[in-house]
Amino acid sequence: NIAGYVEQSFEVGRFDIRPGIRVDRDDFSDETYVSPRLSIGYVATPNLRLTATSGVFYESPRFLVRASDPDNFDLANEEILHFSAGLEYRFAEDWTLISEAYHQELDDLVVDESRATGRADNAGDGTNSGFDLVLQRAFGDRWSADMTYSYNRGRQNDNDGRGSYTPDFSREHFFAVGARWEITDRLQLGARWKWGSGRPGDRFNVNEDVLPGSGLFRYSKEITENNAITLDDYQSLNIRVDYRRPVGPVDVVAFLDIINVYGAESGSPPEFNPRNGEDVVEEGELFPLFGLIFEKSW
Image 1: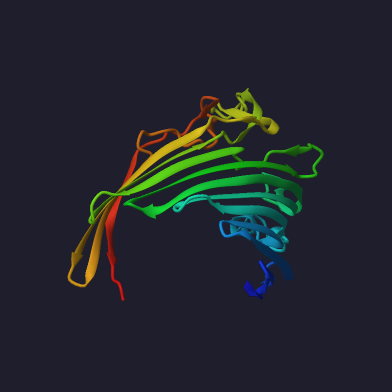
Image 2 (image 1 turned 90 degrees about the vertical axis):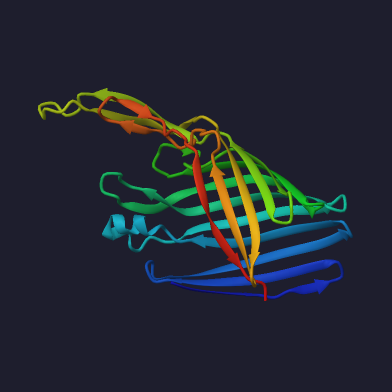
C-alpha cells in the first residue's frame, strides 16, 4: 500500500485556510482512493481561535479480516466523511479551554456475512457524532493539569434486516482528569483517573446440552439482539513516579508506572463459558511497570 499527502496554507487576514488532498493506493482491493481535506482557522481575538474542518478519510480492513476468507482479499476501504467545528479559548495566563463538535457519515463498513465462515462484505453504513471538551493548565510553578470530557453517539446498520445498533467499542461518556507535580528538580509525580460509561452488550438466550450424544455437556449462547444493553462502567487510576539524575552528559530517568491502582474491572464485554453457561467478567488487576530512560540534549 502506498500513500501520499499534500497541503497548502493560505493566510487571508485573520483566516488560516489549509486545503489538502491525500491519495492512497490499496493493492488488496486494487483501488486508488482520493481524499480531499479542508481546514479553516479564524483568530477572533488574541485569546480566541475558531476552527472548522471537513474531509474524506478511508480505513483499510484489518489484515485478520482479509485473512479469514479468500473472498475477503478484495474488500474495499471503509469511507468516513467528517465535519467538525471547534474553538480554543485562553482565559488566563496558564489556562486554556478547547472544545470541538463533530459529525461523521460512515459508508462501506466491513460486516460479517457469516461468523462460521469468516466471510465479510462492505454492506454496513452509519453515523457517528459527539463533542470533546478539554481544560488544560500549562506547566508552571512546578505543576500542570488537564481535564477531558467526551460524548459520543454512534449508530451502525449492517443492512441485514435487523436494523441499526450501537457499534461494539462505543462509550457514550468518557471523563479523565490528570496532573503532574515536579516535587524537586529530580523527582516528579503524575496521576490520572479515567471513567467511561459502559460499552454495549448483546441480549441472548442460553441453551443447554447442545451436543447430545457426544458425551460432553455443553451450553451455547444464542444472540437475540445485537448491542441492545449497556455493560458496567469502567474506571481506573494510574500513578507514575520519575526520578531524574545526570550521569555525565546523559540524564538517567528511573520511572515506575502503577496502572489500575485499585484493580478495577476492565469494562470489557464478558466471555461466555460453554461449560457452565455463564458469562465470565474479566477481573481487573494492578499492573506495575518500571524501567530506565536515557536522555541526551544536543
